[in-house]
Length: 212
Figure 1: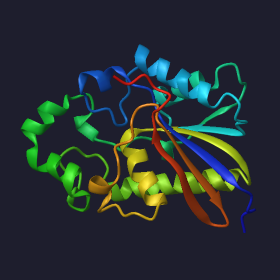
Figure 2 (figure 1 turned 135 degrees about the vertical axis):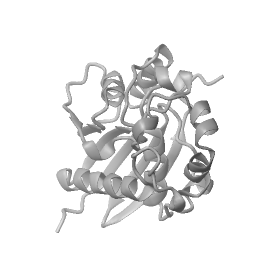
Figure 3 (figure 1 turned 180 degrees about the vertical axis):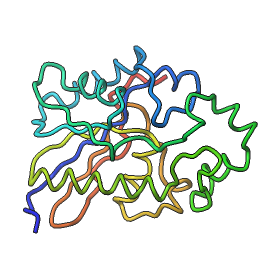
Figure 4 (figure 1 turned 45 degrees about the vertical axis):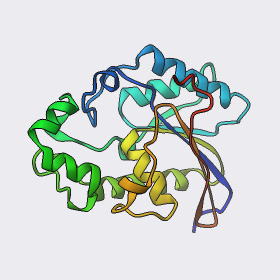
């Protein structure tokens, strides 16, 4: 039985990257943060500067680890990479511009965007939404198990967080593409966990960013 202290989890999407700017599928691939992404991460750090952080988890992608490092600044807290927090895998599509994928695989792209339950990832050898959901929830369970209480920073990815945060609110995989907001780079979402229940306190907050 888990200890039932209050956990407050600060979910942050990584800073904007080169591939975000050029419209390339990222997934398990990686590209470095651009200046805007670094500034966004530092702005998150400013928001959280007076918030004690007891643990920090990221995906194994460098862009999330770098984002966490900029958020932490000079705070000496170990960054713990978890495979479970990685972005959805797009297999052979990674590194290719989304516009090209739209042209070459219009049916598959339509399934990704509009009917998650029908997307089988057979064209690219990536992950289905069901596989993504399973590992993300396993990651959250691991984080909760390792932290009986306290404030936890989690830096992950756009599609992963869009799905995960919707699921933690009681939503479904099937509905999330039309009901859940797209989680933005270096946005902050806050979820509390206690007594076996998740409670969303803030979603996709970007007031700290200089959005134009």
